[in-house]
Length: 132
Image 1 (cartoon, rainbow, N blue to C red):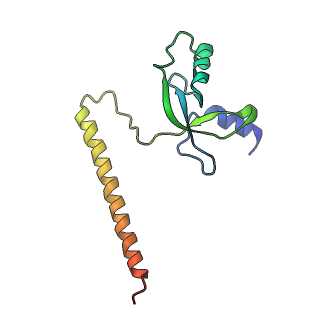
Image 2: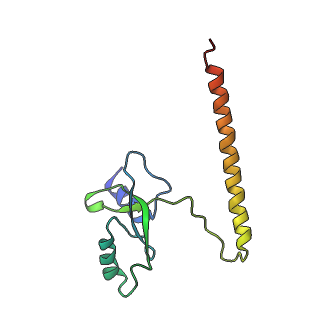
Image 3: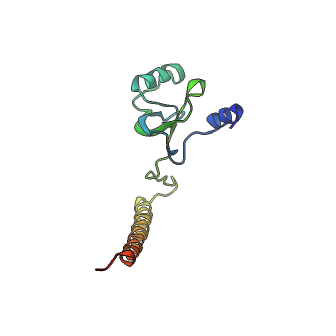
């Protein structure tokens, strides 16, 4: 990977779809205005003084965000990891119950799939058990 491709990745990537193996995941803070991430809350206050003067830090900061530091040195940037438990709801959808039904249906499908996978694993284990 060339330096130019790393710089391009850093500039064009807002968040990671999933954590990168072998790199520790840390908790930190994310600016809801621009997506900037830091590990220390005081650093977020400095960010707001420099970039978003006059805006309330507490109102525009998300805490307890999972993130990874992929590059160090002058390329240092914390990347938030996409939280798959968060589901965006279409603002045009006036029925909160309909959105809840969709989420519950997804959970049921996922639970059913996991249950089937467990049953298959148990069958495999039983097939390889030594009977005495």
